[in-house]
Structure formats: structure tokens, C-alpha cells
Image (tube, rainbow, N blue to C red):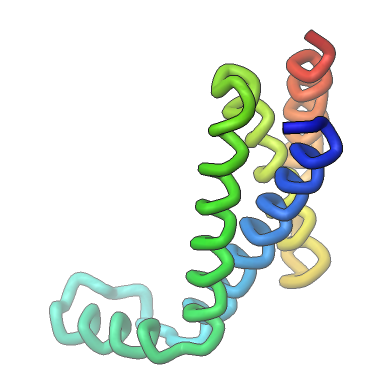
Length: 126
């Protein structure tokens, strides 16, 4: 796999993973359970709402596309390179959470992002 193709595929994986996660979060947040899923009836009701949620279905489809892309990606690059590189998905999900879900990101989390990015730079430079 050429480097441009690999980069394009990996970018699509990141896109589908981040937006799939956002859609799953939106779908799961619509149905409030009062914080108690220990009762079987509430758990079944919650699961029923999740199965019928457009956001959850869209999120699942995006996650499936990301998974298929991941399989294609690791079939062409070393797993010892691909898996640590995949940690950038933590960064893209954090950014999607910040800008699409308007979540507060603490300075400590931003510091963690810098460490992740530093590790990715180390990995890709070898």
C-alpha cells in the first residue's frame, strides 16, 4: 500500500471512528434512565430505545466502516506501527467531543493530548 493510500485510509478510519462515537453518544444521551440500569425492566427499555435510535444506528454503521477500514489498514502495515498510531483516535474523539458535543475539556486532558501526539511523532519517525 502506497503511503498516500495508507494515509487516506487511516484518515477515513479516524473520521468514521470519531463521528460514529459522537452519534452513539447523542443516541445514548436521548434516553435518560435516571442513572439506574440495574433493574432489568429499565435495561430492556433502554436497549429498545437504543436499537430504534437513528443516531445509534448511524453511529454503529460508522463504527463498522471504521472497523472494516482498520482491517484493510493492518493488512498492509505492521501492527507494531498501526496500533500505536491508532491512539490518535483518542485525540480526534476528544476534538469531536469538544466541538460537536460542546463538552468541557480540562487542561489535564489537553496535556494528555500533547503526550499522545508526542508518542505518535516518535512512532512515525522510526
